[in-house]
Image (cartoon, rainbow, N blue to C red; front, side, top):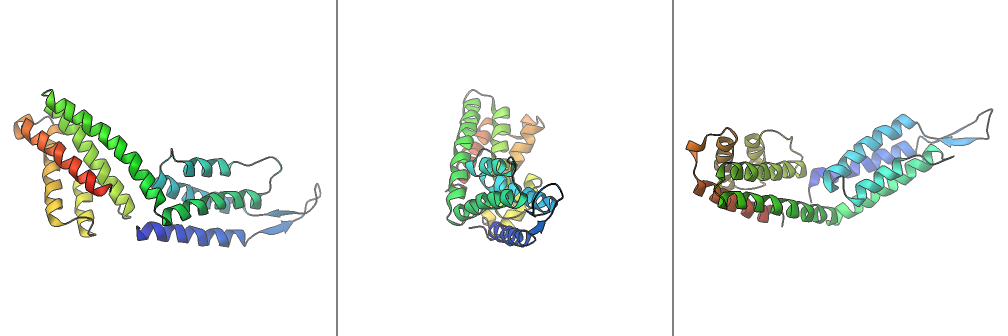
Length: 219
C-alpha cells in the first residue's frame, strides 16, 4: 500500500473531523434555530477529497461518481447533513483503499486500456508502420510511468525525469531504469520522425518490452 496516499486519506479524515467540530447553532428571524458549518470549509475539503478519489479510482469509478453526487445540495438540507454524507462516501473509499480493492479495480481498468493500445501498436508494426507503432507504445509507457508516479507521490514530469525519480524511490532497479531510458530513446526518435535512428525490429522489441513491464507493474 502506498504510504503517501494512505497518509493523505488519514490527513483528510482528521480534517473532516475538525470541520465537523466547528458546527454551530444559528438563529434567524425568518426561521427556527438551525445547525451550520461554514460552506467554505466544506468546499475546500471536498475539492481535496474529490481529487484524491479521482487520482486513485478514476473519474468513471463508482466511488468518484458517488462522491460527486453526495456533494449536491438537497432541498431544505443543512450544511452539516450534506457534509456528513460526503464524508461517508470518502470513508467508504478509504476503507476500500486500505483493503487493496481500489488499486485492484484501477489496475484492471488500466490493464484493459493498455492491452488495446499495445495491440494497436503491434498491428501497426506488423503492417510495416513502425514509426506510429513506436509512438503508440511510447504513449503507453509514459502513461504507465505517470500512474506509478501518482502511486508513489512523485511529481509528474517528462518521461526521463519520471524514470529517474521512480528508480530513486526503488520502484524498480537500475537495469529496468536503463531499459526504460533506451525505450524512451526510440519513442523520442519516432516522435520527431527520425526513422534513420531505429528500425522495425527495434519497435517490435520495444512493444514486447513495454508489454512485459506492464505485466509486472499491474500485478
